[in-house]
Image (cartoon, rainbow over all chains, first blue to last red):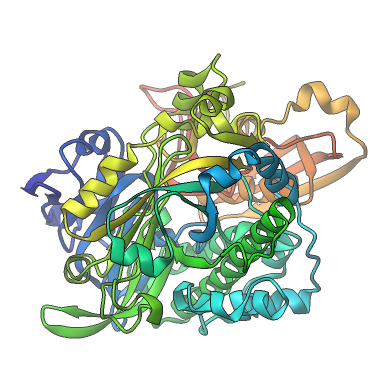
Length: 484
Length: 144
């Protein structure tokens, strides 16, 4: 795709179409979910071209989609969703990303804001020192090669078996925290080496732990089922598969780049390297990706365990007494094999969600039993100074987006621009004045992750709910932010 | 000689490296990576522990692939092995890049501020000098 901006046609208040351009190799249209408040930001980067690029990939079913938090990534745009027919479609590491199964989970508590107010600084310090975070900071879980492979095979189930969580947690994780298709023998020794000592660590960049206040409930029934009430405290964790996933992606992407020609796949962007789903290369990638996804689920559940332990120490009560139940854990960088209704026919598809969240509707039997009456919880972290949201999936999402929605606020500013905009300011102090305790390992992290670097999460969530692909359940306000 | 220019990228960090020669693109790219990671190599070099000889040899599908793979290998050495490979000689023949390096073991005092997941192929190019531009140029984007 050339670097000229593809044509954009407004379909309705919340959808824009990139019409199929055969001269650019597009097989289908692109559809961007956005709003008049958000669409201009999209026009300022290359993400629209990326939506069009994805539309050139073989076997794509329906349109190349982008969610309201769309922004420029590599290969797929961030916020990109694309489904491919399992018989004649492709699977692409560029549609998943390096941080395979990066995702978010939310834990509720019985604690009120007033109960934790006086202990906020202590809680922030305890979380910051008790949970390994930052670049190159290893954890205290040292596994043999054999045990690391078990993590890659069993995912969150490994974590529970080894005391980092309970069986009840598993049903609150997509796929129960384990893709059975994982083949732990596929990732290289180097991948295991990169993931060594990183299990149970947060990482850096935009990964975080936030203690949040349930500020407003919009859907009382759904909130009640999730255990969320106005005035109660919750904890959100954002992390992924760490170095293990990066290495898996790097190696598989390189292999697919070398074999694209073998399958007569013409790539408009090398980062979209892909292989037919049923080819040896496609199968191998899916197995390796699943292993990395399992590692990520184990990692996030161990982080929840550490959060619970820290709360126990600070409040002197057991985590069950504190009501610290996992609400849900979502994946937002993953490709999954799912059956969807397409033009009235059931089709098995490989749905890539890169910076997008699964948002299955109420009544879908793939939604865990506790939430089947309300739809899958969709967790939307915003910037560290504003808010995060809890949403649920809808029937419209099932009909239009392969049951997908946005994954966050979405960056609006480059890291360089964010650092420039915040030069000379003390962001930690600014946030503290707004009642938010911040602890950060990296000197540049706070500047790069400044609130103004992101789109307004209220606008993003309004666009998603306006389009009908999500329902709004609750808005969460940050009280403590822990950054790597 | 080379020049570095950071490009505006919404999610990640990209650089355009301009140089007098192809091998200078590698030198420039490694310095750009050092800058992204926030390692002040020049001022800290005396404090680094062990110096030994090492090398990185990459055979790519083409020029771009060779460069991206070389940078990813260099990153692995730096971030995972904590070995800073300072190239003292670079050969680039066909699609093969060979770097002979002084290898410095980074001790605990050397902090990497920003982790780079990988160098991506997205929009990556290498341009040879031409009538309108007398320099070698490459662009790559690092996933942060």
